[in-house]
Length: 188
Image 1 (spheres, rainbow, N blue to C red):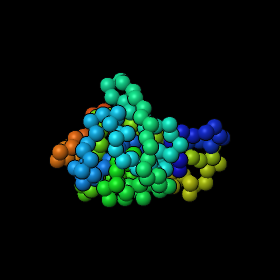
Image 2 (cartoon, helix red, strand yellow; image 1 turned 120 degrees about the vertical axis):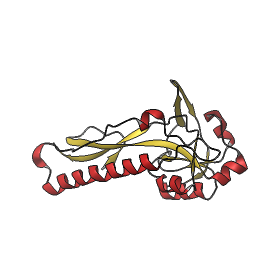
Image 3 (cartoon, rainbow, N blue to C red; image 1 turned 135 degrees about the vertical axis):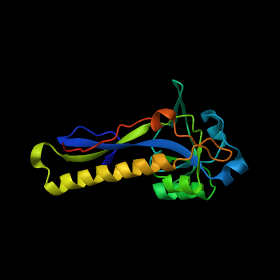
């Protein structure tokens, strides 16, 4: 499996889903530091830089066709997505992650979205197989299994995503909730 853009190769990539980048923080951090109203407020906050944010020039945002990028100086720079998420849950700052990486924390209320009306982009998830009929039946079965599992996660996320969160707008961007495009089978 590969998340994000693929380099040129002789392999065939089968899209199984998409993950969306989001900002998240604990309610206790936001109560203490205040919630940013716009991306330009982020330099005044403690930011947690996880593996998905390392090497980037800044965090990119888009709203109503307007794009902006904010250079983030992470007070905490962590190599693992789980550790970055746990740091945010502990109230140490704002983390940039994917919506699925924080699903459990969004569900239990230990994290809420920050700047939910600003989009941060997405990354395609692919199963990468050898070109042609070279893929083993087990690899094809794994690919089909991953499509089914990702669809379950997609359904769980869509059903469990709160329409509001006390004091914070946690709405999933409107065009995300209306999308019914999901892979059915990657090897048809």
